[in-house]
Length: 238
Image (tube, rainbow, N blue to C red; front, side):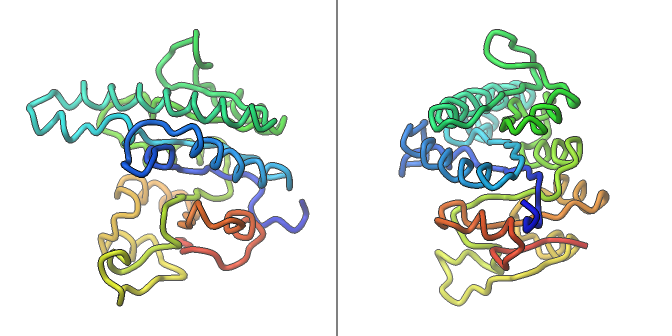
């Protein structure tokens, strides 16, 4: 454990990470694959907390385009994140990783209420903690929830796990000339409008000096190498 650069992390996953190739629903095989990645890093002593989105189950924009109330759309998204959290919890526990789900919206039959000190205690006991229901408030994204929870639990880094190996100046799937950045400042990320995370989340990290690391979740050993301090993905700092 002494060779680890980051010993407590907040892993931010998109809801689509759990979906099949069409981008919707929950694919148990994908959940198991993510659980395998998390299991690998917990074995080397890293304390892991997770925030997961809900884009695979509900896209609030679709409701807003039809005139839905923003608060209602956001609360539906928060509830969907709890479904994803439970699916990932099940996959992790089947892989032998002790896991707890905490929800910002109370639903005691399926998840613990979010309590900061209890979450930290779970992490100290080497349990993975999955934070569901975002911040519990509409108008805030799961990116912002991830930044907030990362600071509350004193995480060393916020890891944004994606399908690409870092931050590019253009979409690498559409532009073969796109350039990948090894390092960016928070201001660069905001000024370039690179849309890795929303501006509220980036600003929150900037104000509190929390590094953001963007990497490819599906790189077989990328996450573990990054935690040991190797140059993987794109690091965003001050």
